[in-house]
Image (cartoon, rainbow, N blue to C red; front, side):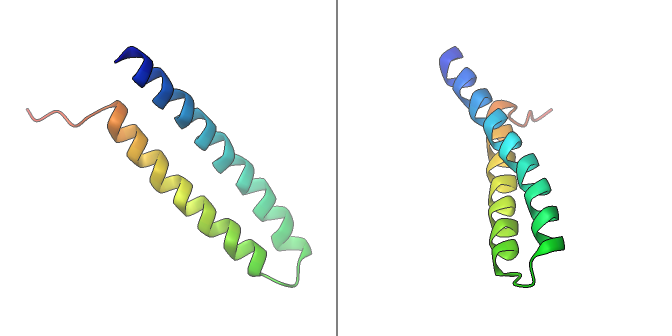
Length: 66
């Protein structure tokens, strides 16, 4: 169980890092590109990452019914 938790935490860290990196890439491309298609694709990727991060967080800290 500990290895599984550590694996989830490691993956969560990687996803959060990629999510942050996409912020800066999207900001740079938004200013410089006239074609917004690459920006839209990056924003979709960022939303997918956000969903995966939320899923992983729920696996690591499950809801406790009081």
